Image 1 (cartoon, one colour):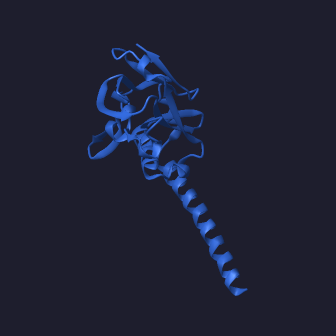
Image 2 (image 1 turned 120 degrees about the vertical axis):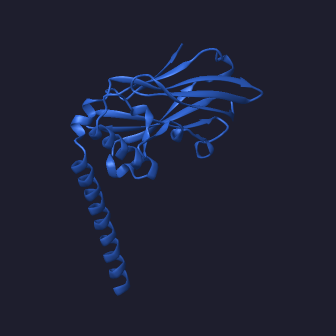
Image 3 (image 1 turned 60 degrees about the vertical axis):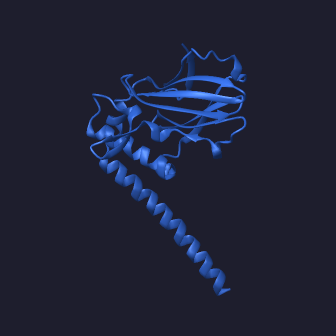
Length: 204
């Protein structure tokens, strides 16, 4: 009987400790960042990534180019993956009615997400020793905005995003059923809508 009481007590302590950790984490974030001012700097829509791709013998070759908030090309990623259907996975984090988008993973109908190509480090930039997601960089960003995005970025990379926001999810954007129909000369832009939270693919 005493053993079960101790187990229950330990479990309660762990629950309380987790709750305190979350409160502490949120307090630290709130104290360091003015979230309202940071969100005000977000654009209504932006295009963090554009893609070109081709297919041959069951292999999909793809080229990704990443862009900042002012549509400047900041990084590129070239690779290939086995399959006939391609998926680009985004982390979408909703905070106070605004959505943040982070291209995260590429996988296919053959290669599962657990074995997919992680692409998020490709657009990570070093700003004075701080690793920052370059897709959110711009000339008008201030220290407050940078700290805000940085905290979300760290939470995603560490797997602790649920401490920062309970409204987040992955969104796999499906790029055509038949990959052979894709024009290798076309560019596919992934347009992200900050207010609506949606992603649309526009062929150019």
